[in-house]
Image 1 (cartoon, rainbow, N blue to C red):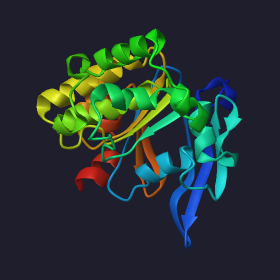
Image 2 (tube, rainbow, N blue to C red):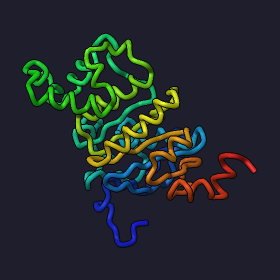
Image 3 (cartoon, rainbow, N blue to C red):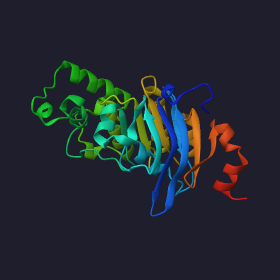
Amino acid sequence: MLIGHQPKDFLLAVSGLTVSFDGFKAVNDLSFYVEENEIRVIIGPNGAGKTTVLDLICGKTKATAGSIQFRGQELTKMRENEIVQAGVGRKFQTPSVFEDLTVLENLEISFPRGRSVFGSLTFDRDATVRARIEEVAEIIFLKDRLNTYAALLSHGQKQWLEIGMLLIQNPDLLMLDEPVAGMSVSERAKTAELLNRIIKDRSVLVIEHDMKFVEDIAHKVTVLHQGQILSEGTMDKVKNDPKVIEVYLGH
């Protein structure tokens, strides 16, 4: 996999990653590499270790062994907030938007300048901030909803707003855990369009069960099973891999 390449050549290089919970290896000697401007999708049956991988990358869970290098920085030695500042954004399964604030206010409080206490106190909605909010709102299909309270958005729109709240921080790697769960068919199609639109500036790592959606977005698919890679490659390659068919569909 790394022939002619070093971990530093990739945006994200996961090498020999292992985490044990009371002797159970949830992730076991896992290695994979994400390139610039790539949409990588991790699939696999329940309990395969997919969400744990995201937890390890963002620092929520500490690795037992192995390395996670992001633009050459070793993430396993960093705290969660340092990993965010390094350029890794994470969206969890359930949208956590501020329902009593408008779309504009949700995006505004996520703007990096307002992150520190001092930054929040001196924060001013200047032309730069406003332009960035409008740019992101357009990307996430909410430009005409800037003054709508988040509580009034559909489930899919809340998911897009939360992606926007991460985008406004301009991460180099955006990690999404089942972003289209509970969405309508049209919302799923628009989410695929959204992700394909944002990768000219970043890479996206997605965990997903919806295979149609995976086909619409994935440059490369990594199939996890029992904390290890079962198969990896294009969606076509993975879909026709006998091992994947057996684990997913039974004989």
